[in-house]
Length: 264
Image 1 (tube, rainbow, N blue to C red):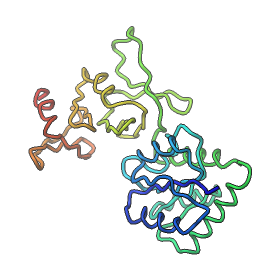
Image 2: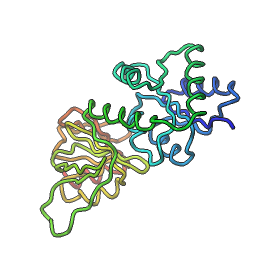
Image 3: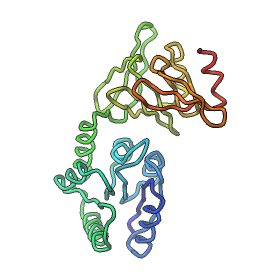
Image 4: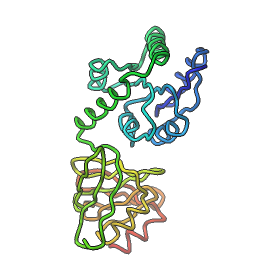
Protein backbone atom coordinates (compact mmCIF):
# COMPACT_ATOMS: atom_id res chain seq x y z
CA UNK A 1 0.00 0.00 0.00
CA UNK A 2 1.31 3.43 -0.95
CA UNK A 3 2.39 5.83 1.80
CA UNK A 4 -0.32 8.53 2.00
CA UNK A 5 1.46 11.87 1.89
CA UNK A 6 0.54 15.53 2.39
CA UNK A 7 2.67 18.42 1.10
CA UNK A 8 2.58 21.71 3.04
CA UNK A 9 4.45 24.76 1.76
CA UNK A 10 3.54 28.41 1.17
CA UNK A 11 5.74 28.62 -1.95
CA UNK A 12 4.06 27.41 -5.19
CA UNK A 13 7.36 26.29 -6.72
CA UNK A 14 8.20 24.19 -3.66
CA UNK A 15 4.77 22.52 -3.69
CA UNK A 16 4.98 21.78 -7.41
CA UNK A 17 8.54 20.50 -7.10
CA UNK A 18 7.72 18.07 -4.30
CA UNK A 19 4.61 16.87 -6.11
CA UNK A 20 6.63 16.20 -9.26
CA UNK A 21 9.34 14.30 -7.38
CA UNK A 22 6.82 12.20 -5.48
CA UNK A 23 4.89 11.40 -8.65
CA UNK A 24 7.93 9.38 -9.74
CA UNK A 25 7.84 7.31 -6.53
CA UNK A 26 5.30 4.44 -6.73
CA UNK A 27 5.49 3.85 -2.96
CA UNK A 28 4.13 7.33 -2.19
CA UNK A 29 0.70 8.80 -2.95
CA UNK A 30 0.05 12.53 -2.51
CA UNK A 31 -3.43 12.88 -0.98
CA UNK A 32 -3.41 16.66 -0.35
CA UNK A 33 -1.36 19.75 -1.12
CA UNK A 34 -1.67 22.65 1.32
CA UNK A 35 -0.44 26.20 0.78
CA UNK A 36 -0.57 27.33 4.42
CA UNK A 37 -0.70 26.11 8.01
CA UNK A 38 -4.45 26.49 8.40
CA UNK A 39 -5.14 24.18 5.45
CA UNK A 40 -2.54 21.75 6.80
CA UNK A 41 -4.22 21.41 10.21
CA UNK A 42 -7.57 20.75 8.57
CA UNK A 43 -6.27 18.22 6.03
CA UNK A 44 -4.07 16.32 8.49
CA UNK A 45 -6.99 15.93 10.89
CA UNK A 46 -9.31 14.94 8.05
CA UNK A 47 -7.10 12.59 6.02
CA UNK A 48 -4.80 11.18 8.74
CA UNK A 49 -1.79 10.77 6.44
CA UNK A 50 1.22 8.53 7.00
CA UNK A 51 3.72 11.21 6.02
CA UNK A 52 3.80 15.02 5.86
CA UNK A 53 6.34 17.22 4.09
CA UNK A 54 6.05 20.31 6.28
CA UNK A 55 7.54 23.73 5.67
CA UNK A 56 8.87 25.43 8.82
CA UNK A 57 8.75 29.06 7.74
CA UNK A 58 5.17 29.97 6.82
CA UNK A 59 3.24 33.18 7.50
CA UNK A 60 0.40 33.24 10.03
CA UNK A 61 0.74 29.64 11.27
CA UNK A 62 4.19 28.02 10.97
CA UNK A 63 5.12 24.35 10.83
CA UNK A 64 5.57 23.98 14.57
CA UNK A 65 2.17 25.51 15.25
CA UNK A 66 0.65 23.07 12.76
CA UNK A 67 2.00 20.08 14.67
CA UNK A 68 0.92 21.60 17.95
CA UNK A 69 -2.65 22.17 16.71
CA UNK A 70 -3.67 18.91 15.03
CA UNK A 71 -6.06 16.76 17.05
CA UNK A 72 -4.97 13.47 15.48
CA UNK A 73 -1.69 11.83 16.44
CA UNK A 74 1.37 13.38 14.81
CA UNK A 75 2.31 11.54 11.58
CA UNK A 76 5.84 10.96 10.30
CA UNK A 77 7.14 14.41 9.40
CA UNK A 78 9.88 15.53 7.04
CA UNK A 79 10.52 19.19 7.77
CA UNK A 80 11.56 21.61 5.03
CA UNK A 81 13.42 24.80 5.79
CA UNK A 82 15.56 27.36 4.00
CA UNK A 83 16.47 29.72 6.82
CA UNK A 84 15.89 28.43 10.33
CA UNK A 85 19.29 27.16 11.45
CA UNK A 86 17.96 26.70 14.97
CA UNK A 87 15.41 24.24 13.64
CA UNK A 88 17.98 22.33 11.61
CA UNK A 89 20.20 21.92 14.66
CA UNK A 90 17.22 20.80 16.74
CA UNK A 91 16.25 18.20 14.14
CA UNK A 92 19.79 16.83 14.10
CA UNK A 93 19.95 16.62 17.87
CA UNK A 94 16.58 14.86 18.06
CA UNK A 95 17.20 12.54 15.08
CA UNK A 96 14.36 14.14 13.10
CA UNK A 97 14.46 14.22 9.32
CA UNK A 98 14.47 17.42 7.32
CA UNK A 99 15.18 18.87 3.90
CA UNK A 100 17.32 21.99 3.79
CA UNK A 101 16.22 24.00 0.74
CA UNK A 102 17.49 23.75 -1.92
CA UNK A 103 18.10 20.01 -1.66
CA UNK A 104 19.72 17.54 -4.04
CA UNK A 105 18.11 14.47 -5.61
CA UNK A 106 20.40 12.34 -3.48
CA UNK A 107 19.25 14.01 -0.29
CA UNK A 108 15.60 13.62 -1.30
CA UNK A 109 16.13 9.92 -2.00
CA UNK A 110 17.79 9.57 1.40
CA UNK A 111 14.88 11.03 3.36
CA UNK A 112 12.36 8.95 1.40
CA UNK A 113 14.29 5.76 2.14
CA UNK A 114 14.43 6.60 5.84
CA UNK A 115 10.71 7.41 5.89
CA UNK A 116 9.82 4.12 4.20
CA UNK A 117 11.99 2.17 6.62
CA UNK A 118 10.56 3.94 9.69
CA UNK A 119 6.94 3.60 8.58
CA UNK A 120 7.41 -0.11 7.85
CA UNK A 121 8.40 -0.74 11.45
CA UNK A 122 6.35 -0.67 14.62
CA UNK A 123 5.53 2.85 15.88
CA UNK A 124 8.31 4.23 18.02
CA UNK A 125 8.87 7.39 19.99
CA UNK A 126 8.52 9.56 16.87
CA UNK A 127 5.43 11.41 18.09
CA UNK A 128 6.88 11.98 21.54
CA UNK A 129 10.14 13.33 20.11
CA UNK A 130 8.24 15.68 17.80
CA UNK A 131 6.09 16.92 20.67
CA UNK A 132 9.22 17.67 22.69
CA UNK A 133 10.73 19.49 19.71
CA UNK A 134 7.60 21.58 19.21
CA UNK A 135 7.50 22.49 22.92
CA UNK A 136 11.18 23.46 22.88
CA UNK A 137 10.76 25.58 19.76
CA UNK A 138 7.69 27.38 21.07
CA UNK A 139 9.43 28.04 24.37
CA UNK A 140 12.44 29.44 22.53
CA UNK A 141 10.19 31.68 20.46
CA UNK A 142 8.25 32.71 23.59
CA UNK A 143 5.01 31.58 22.00
CA UNK A 144 2.19 29.72 23.69
CA UNK A 145 0.79 26.48 22.24
CA UNK A 146 -2.66 26.20 20.73
CA UNK A 147 -5.39 25.90 23.35
CA UNK A 148 -8.97 26.73 24.17
CA UNK A 149 -10.61 29.74 25.78
CA UNK A 150 -12.27 29.10 29.10
CA UNK A 151 -15.45 31.01 29.91
CA UNK A 152 -15.49 32.94 33.16
CA UNK A 153 -18.45 32.74 35.52
CA UNK A 154 -21.03 35.53 35.48
CA UNK A 155 -20.24 36.15 39.14
CA UNK A 156 -16.92 37.69 38.06
CA UNK A 157 -17.98 40.81 36.10
CA UNK A 158 -14.70 42.64 36.79
CA UNK A 159 -12.55 39.81 35.43
CA UNK A 160 -10.65 41.53 32.61
CA UNK A 161 -8.53 38.59 31.53
CA UNK A 162 -8.65 36.11 28.70
CA UNK A 163 -8.31 32.64 30.20
CA UNK A 164 -6.61 30.16 27.87
CA UNK A 165 -6.11 26.48 28.58
CA UNK A 166 -3.17 24.86 26.80
CA UNK A 167 -0.87 21.89 27.41
CA UNK A 168 -2.37 21.20 30.81
CA UNK A 169 -1.82 24.80 31.97
CA UNK A 170 -4.08 27.83 32.22
CA UNK A 171 -2.74 31.19 31.04
CA UNK A 172 -4.27 34.54 32.00
CA UNK A 173 -3.93 37.34 29.44
CA UNK A 174 -4.99 40.84 30.44
CA UNK A 175 -7.29 42.38 27.85
CA UNK A 176 -5.16 45.51 28.11
CA UNK A 177 -2.10 43.55 26.93
CA UNK A 178 -3.74 42.31 23.71
CA UNK A 179 -2.71 44.29 20.62
CA UNK A 180 -4.99 42.59 18.12
CA UNK A 181 -6.64 39.28 17.30
CA UNK A 182 -6.23 37.56 13.96
CA UNK A 183 -8.91 35.21 12.68
CA UNK A 184 -8.63 32.10 10.51
CA UNK A 185 -11.19 29.52 9.40
CA UNK A 186 -11.62 27.85 12.78
CA UNK A 187 -8.98 29.29 15.09
CA UNK A 188 -7.57 32.65 16.12
CA UNK A 189 -4.19 34.08 17.06
CA UNK A 190 -4.11 36.49 20.01
CA UNK A 191 -1.20 38.91 19.60
CA UNK A 192 0.40 40.53 22.66
CA UNK A 193 3.73 42.31 23.07
CA UNK A 194 5.50 39.21 24.38
CA UNK A 195 3.58 36.21 23.05
CA UNK A 196 1.09 34.97 20.50
CA UNK A 197 -1.54 32.40 21.48
CA UNK A 198 -3.07 30.15 18.82
CA UNK A 199 -6.54 29.30 20.11
CA UNK A 200 -9.44 27.20 18.86
CA UNK A 201 -12.15 29.86 18.90
CA UNK A 202 -14.01 32.06 16.44
CA UNK A 203 -13.45 35.74 15.79
CA UNK A 204 -17.19 36.30 16.28
CA UNK A 205 -16.94 34.78 19.74
CA UNK A 206 -14.09 37.12 20.61
CA UNK A 207 -15.91 40.14 19.19
CA UNK A 208 -18.82 39.46 21.52
CA UNK A 209 -16.57 38.84 24.49
CA UNK A 210 -14.48 41.99 24.04
CA UNK A 211 -16.93 44.54 22.66
CA UNK A 212 -17.15 46.29 26.04
CA UNK A 213 -13.35 46.61 26.34
CA UNK A 214 -12.43 49.04 23.54
CA UNK A 215 -11.89 46.32 20.96
CA UNK A 216 -13.17 46.98 17.42
CA UNK A 217 -13.74 44.55 14.55
CA UNK A 218 -11.91 46.13 11.59
CA UNK A 219 -12.15 43.35 8.98
CA UNK A 220 -13.36 39.80 8.49
CA UNK A 221 -10.09 38.58 9.96
CA UNK A 222 -9.08 41.16 12.57
CA UNK A 223 -10.14 42.72 15.87
CA UNK A 224 -8.01 45.56 17.25
CA UNK A 225 -7.52 46.93 20.76
CA UNK A 226 -8.03 50.64 20.12
CA UNK A 227 -5.83 51.52 23.08
CA UNK A 228 -2.93 50.09 21.08
CA UNK A 229 -3.62 52.16 17.94
CA UNK A 230 -0.92 54.76 17.33
CA UNK A 231 -1.88 56.05 13.86
CA UNK A 232 -4.68 55.83 11.32
CA UNK A 233 -3.94 56.63 7.68
CA UNK A 234 -5.69 56.24 4.31
CA UNK A 235 -5.02 53.10 2.31
CA UNK A 236 -6.00 51.78 -1.12
CA UNK A 237 -9.63 51.39 -2.24
CA UNK A 238 -11.07 53.57 0.51
CA UNK A 239 -9.58 51.33 3.19
CA UNK A 240 -7.57 52.45 6.21
CA UNK A 241 -4.33 51.25 7.78
CA UNK A 242 -3.79 51.17 11.52
CA UNK A 243 -0.33 51.34 13.05
CA UNK A 244 -0.18 49.80 16.50
CA UNK A 245 2.12 50.73 19.35
CA UNK A 246 4.44 47.83 18.47
CA UNK A 247 4.59 49.08 14.83
CA UNK A 248 2.45 46.23 13.47
CA UNK A 249 0.09 47.20 10.63
CA UNK A 250 -3.56 46.12 10.55
CA UNK A 251 -5.87 46.97 7.65
CA UNK A 252 -9.41 48.32 8.09
CA UNK A 253 -11.60 47.08 5.22
CA UNK A 254 -14.22 49.35 3.62
CA UNK A 255 -17.19 47.43 5.00
CA UNK A 256 -15.85 47.74 8.56
CA UNK A 257 -14.99 51.45 8.47
CA UNK A 258 -18.34 52.30 10.16
CA UNK A 259 -17.25 50.22 13.17
CA UNK A 260 -14.16 52.36 13.55
CA UNK A 261 -16.05 55.59 12.89
CA UNK A 262 -18.64 54.82 15.55
CA UNK A 263 -15.86 54.23 18.06
CA UNK A 264 -14.04 57.45 17.21
